[in-house]
Length: 375
Image (cartoon, rainbow, N blue to C red; front, side, top):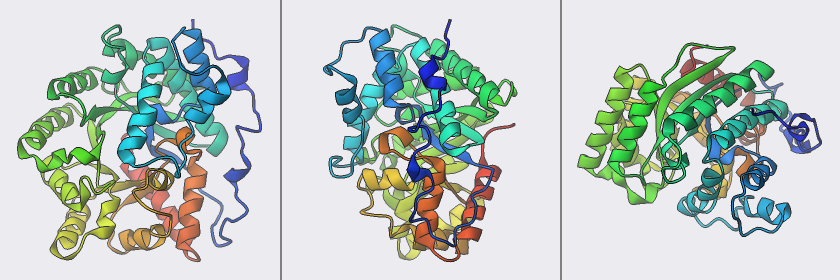
């Protein structure tokens, strides 16, 4: 039987870091909303290294690390060490996904994502995304067992912390099409069973993975993905899609995805800031007409070097609001990049400046309106 150990339930200084209310917070930023929805957060990057270390040791997994300190340092993503988005995904996620590749590990990990997010930022809703295919440990486990375990972990967390939760299953650009079809079938099988103490089942589908392969430029590949997504949509699942996070897909990739997939939300989409002329006009028009919400994740974009700093945020968010393009603020990989949802809101607010209040409120409203959760 899985039971949370005392260290996981205790409130420590690490659970409430000083950065939660940084001294440099702009004076115009109002008290942050009591509705805090994190709609873009990955299981592989949202679990404390201490929990991963305990899981690794408890399961007897072989590791190159002799102690927790060296393990923790290896899972701390620093902008001066990460070379690119591909480097970030390859360096950290392969490790965390392997550790989480058992039903017990998946359940504990899911629980801790919610528990820590609530204690750090008082979040009220989380849509947790992960790739179930990558957690079967080379066929040792079934996807059904992994998905059920995550659902059980989220149900416990929803009961304990009053947080609404749901699962988004991620497809992979780095996976064969057949593997992605298996994820689609699993998502349909485990789609929302209603709400149990605020915990939903699988509520959506995502596409994630290295953008450098520019697969969205391949009509046959994108057509097959569109067929998959269409089947998921017909079964009642919502669609989000990582695109426009980097130059690998760019603004052109965003437009192709909108034309083929018609997602409800787009993960990142910040390449819009560099679009010009007809491409920019077409992209903004489509985002407006279809009401597609951009999931902004500021800190991880800086860590992965797709942006050099946060200076772009203020003008970008203002532009989205001016053109009635929905946007929300999220953490993406909070423990890998050392952030939380309130800190992400404060980062955006600091870059906006004096009129941050209304725009931050708008982001919260968009998150509430565009969430996939039913309760």
